[in-house]
Image 1: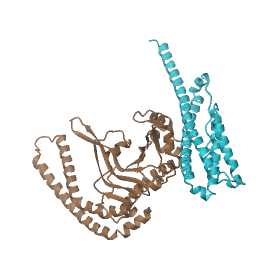
Image 2: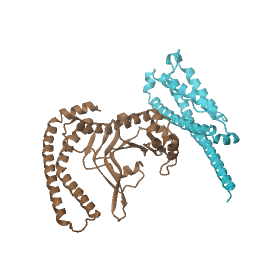
Image 3: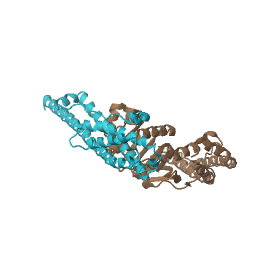
Image 4: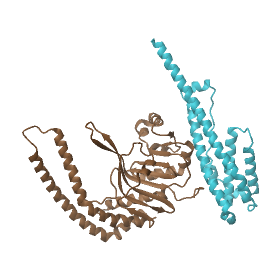
Length: 184
Length: 322
């Protein structure tokens, strides 16, 4: 077999492998985002129950509760983009965080069975969301690396693939919430 | 739970009279072992000389056979000699030490963690053909069920002469405890050998091509990623289990144990295998039981095993799993 044919076969093989690896990375991002979406929905489903339970006690934080309900309604709208979902998730996380901190000020509420159960469920979903976010960020990093690194970047440009955004780590933001500022 | 220093106090104060008495026995035993050892070697050499025909060349095979026979028979005699002393040591020192750590712990010296649990753990992919072990501890610590023991898992090979050869799959401490989060899949954490030997790029690629394992999970904690490699059936669940805080705690645990640590999360349980490559909790014969180093070996190993509940916060029921 002439050398030129062998070279052509090798090049073709390399191109196929590059193409496939890019597609699989893109699909991985898509798959994991679907799981992120599922856990986010799980949390949105808890919100009405939470609001109904705490609103009887919480007089000063009414605005916080309306805010959360509004965010939930927004998130449940059809056809919102992935970027919007990511942004909404950050807002919901910080609002829910503030509500949970506020619960600490009401001893009756803290001892309420339903609230305790909700708190457990929220903690669990919070951890699941955090895990899903981290998995998503890893998948996006792998994908972004592939479309920026030689040699896959040439292929990616041809396939019209562009960088994707990662979730910002919001745990640190939540810790910095000043409770006093929120309620005065 | 009592701290290591409290336990050391307990060892040297409460157990002191027993230790002294056992140490006397140990000295007598050591004397007997040395005497019998010399006598045994002498007899063996005599038999060897009388059996072997020196006029022809001694084949290598005969020599190897004799050496193995010498070691094997010697081992049996040694085990027989220390049997009573070992039993006494375990019931008078190890058992009280475990009860001192927590009243709700039970100790059985001649049992081990069941093979089916070791198989379930998925930590080692080779099929186990022989399993032995001892020093089984089980019980409840702050509402979390835990069990651990010494384990020795081996695999059988046939050598060229169709004789059985045994290789060790795992030897050390095997710990199983309930985990405080719900999960369905399998997540396995192994010491990272590929990445540390071949570097990030080649090592990472090799890890992702491990056909014996599930999907490779890259963790977002560099220190953790350097020490361990994670495989799981579920990318998200692996991260749900391995929160940032748990990764940090596992790293601390690994540093404290100072031996290779294998961890898996399967069937609502955490499995940990610490590769010591020796039988633990055995009485020392040639060193004094009162020596600090010897005492610390018993105390800190027990503390490490029982301490995982607090160390990894397995008793924290923050989630919906009650």
